[in-house]
Length: 145
Image (tube, rainbow, N blue to C red; front, side, top):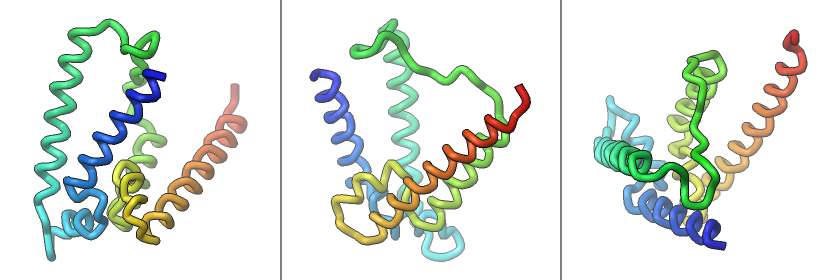
């Protein structure tokens, strides 16, 4: 139960931060990407603040605890390889963010705003996840053992 309450509290703080920063508003995000037109640099401060907070948090967390409060251990990536899957996924994420003005983290809190675009984005994102998993499973089966 404490694990669920902790996840809820962390999600609520994240969602409130997304809403306050304007990252739930696709027009603000798209203006950030429009450097030749109506460029809005304010999201640089949001991203910089998030990066600084995360860097300090990781340093404090990993320096103070051997394991998370509600888990047996940290689940960190072990691979440091830059491969086609990573580059392709990053490209799809960036293109989708640039076209729609939503990233997954900003779209979930934006669902509460009730805009049809948000629901369309979430549906497209979920469809993309399903397609990616199917393709990954097919390529894993086709790969020689």
